[in-house]
Image (cartoon, rainbow, N blue to C red; front, side):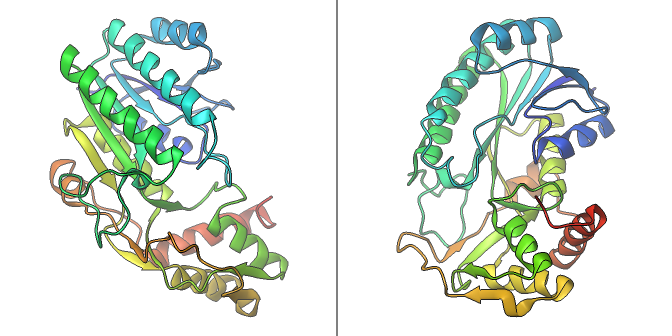
Length: 301
């Protein structure tokens, strides 16, 4: 049995893919976000206003909630004080959801919750010692929500996203900025690119979250590909499709000493308990991403 799901951040990078993925699983999807979507019952509400978010939940009375909304402004969100606003809003949203008879709450976290250094992040064994305010806000929110869920008999899961790319990515992020430079024929100064990261196509991340909402896996669940590749390989893959490899200026930007050499997701829970495996490998994912930008007729704005 599916149900009625409220998706916050439904117009965002992940949300716009999560809405159709949830509809395909039989959910009645209600969305709240910056822009309306024809694929969801749309609601206008500012989730940072207590009365607005409580009224929204009371009106919809969702059985499920996928909470994607958060401050994700590139270059700012790691240290933004708005993280604290979203902690408060999320906890209050969970209370309203529980009071309205909600059954399953899926929050969305980040690999930034983990302590850097492990060759592969495992939900059960890798400690959470965030290095940023953003990571600490996500980790703290998850801990409080887990206690709240246990106390009230609420089904609760927490999808930890790793490194996403794909159609709809806004400027200020690695892939969108690289595509912009390659399509415009301008220099793209970057690090040496030998650090390895776990990249996942955004549509796969959305499908994984939809499967998590529809299932009964509990606690933190890594949402990643399970394989870390050098950042250089990703950028060279884009250049192979768009041309302009000479514009990739590797080593022009120093890599912070605190940047870990590898960030990779352990995906045992995702594959075994949630039953999800990615549909896009890197070549197909880059093909899809480049085709989306070419269809727009210009570099990402």
